[in-house]
Amino acid sequence: QLQLVESGGGLVQPGGSLRLSCAASGFSWHYFAAGWFRQAPGKEREGVSCISSGGSTNYADSVKGRFTISRDNAKNTVYLQMNSLKPEDTAIYYCAVNLLGLCREYDHWGQGTQVTVSS
Image 1 (tube, rainbow, N blue to C red):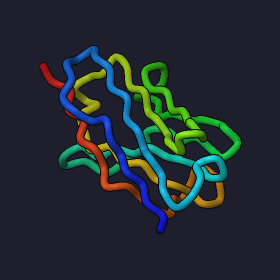
Image 2: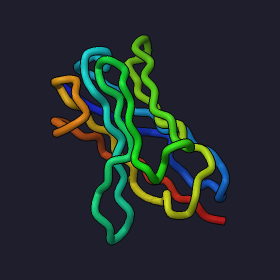
Image 3: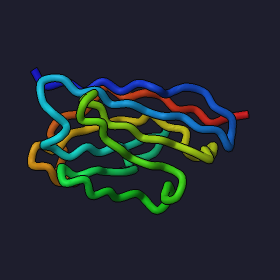
């Protein structure tokens, strides 16, 4: 059974860092694309970052230079390193998988992890 489990969220002060993890079971990240999304209260879900099966990455303009997506095939986990966090980064963060290895139209989603940036 295909499953995604996010972890690593929490409360952090502005300017701080967090690393989110998305552990997969039932499939290997090596062959598929992983996306990170977020949804803040009262707002629509937005794409944050993606890494394709080939290793290509992309980022939303709002996080470029601050967030880094990566993949550890041995641990079958995708990470989102978030630095220089701002209050507007507060949201529930979700990871998702595209079974074609492309950064679009995701097939399965995790439950999400809360990130709160506040002093």
